[in-house]
Image (cartoon, rainbow, N blue to C red; front, side):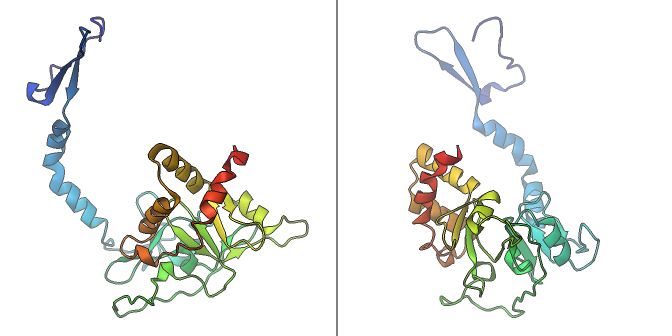
Length: 264
């Protein structure tokens, strides 16, 4: 650091400054220790904890932030402020955001849910969202090994699509466009930002975001395919990561990333 641009340290206590002398140079580097930032935050610790706890409870009036209807049970974890919404508004707000993570108030806490259970499908072409009934047990029961959580349970339709995103693994009933002259299903998915593990009878798709994220992790951190998907399992369900299927995903991830230069 030259004399023309001196570092202002008059407001920094000496106990919070680390002086580092570089050998062979006359420069002196002044660095604020990490403890100083913690000391600034410490008076607000209780308030921060209170805010975090308040975020786990519903407001006094559970009204939809769009239509103002009361009894709105859904909230989106990826939307700013995690607003509450009714079923109809939740579907409309996420028509083009099918991979947002949704939770539902069950009377005791917000449990992980999925847009697949709120609506009937994910539009790939020019399809539209449709309402579909969903069911949540009223009584508390322990999860057995043979049972699946609601948001981890694949649809009954065996033609569902497993979509892998950075925030979760999703199971979708895709509504393809069947208009005259429409593209093949795998091209419709690509146009929607999904890369297929196979072009015939697509069953697994990866968002461009998750492929790019995996490449960065692999290059910068040396993350293997299995370790990366283990992370996705825990992101999808931190309590029951072993219930997130892995067999259909890991073979397709290296194949899909190998074709990413085509996108570049």
